[in-house]
Length: 334
Image 1: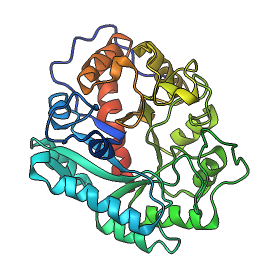
Image 2: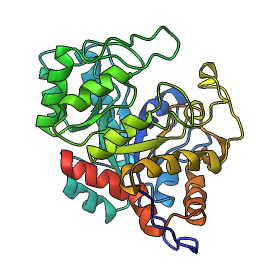
Image 3: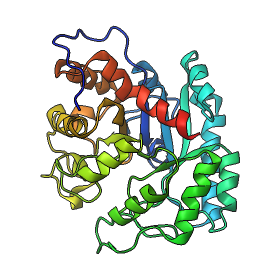
């Protein structure tokens, strides 16, 4: 299954609207002592850089918490960012909100929890989080919790532990509420347990291809095919460790190799060869990991778009990668 090939494409006159499937910007703002409203030399995303590059939407992650109190504290801090008029943020809670944001000079923010360890097993806090605007959640980060097991970077893997009974209930209840399930960070066993019970399309919000970069945090070919069959979406991860096998896991946050667009294209082409263009989106993992120089600024995204156009992808393909595929997923899961 291959994408439509076009021999020539001119530079886009209008940058495509983009949904970034996973960013850690709100947490980075605190640590880097900067403000979303103000352009900064620190970090990658802020309002000025997002708006001028038409990065109109993002899933702004709440970092993994260990207790319901911490989850609610994280949601409160997230909502404070939204409520600050200077931030020019719009809290996206339903599909109709996408059209509203397109017409105004604001960034559409989708609330996401990166790991579910802070939710109670009775899921009362999950239901409350939904009422407060949560629309996407992972099950684990790079850890083990009461719901499932993630891929563990620096410790021994727990390959025989997948979703717990509580984890299966978590997936079912999240999908009943209208919260998109994110399988990024799960170990293989937990991934397959999710796919066994899911009633809706899922996403891997920021994951790459294991056949190109052999690390368990990436997806193998069977997983990619299964996500396609599920009508799910894979958001590409710009993290150097997940793009290039030459980058070691221990260099996750400190390496800066000269990875080019050609390496990213290998991941895209591999996914397309197994599925089709409707499976690929942009996750990024901006403000959460070391990014290659070619994409370490929001201002470099247009060059990446042009690179795709120059290497066989059509404008219609690009619009699906940047916006359409995630939009379709949310329309099916919210």
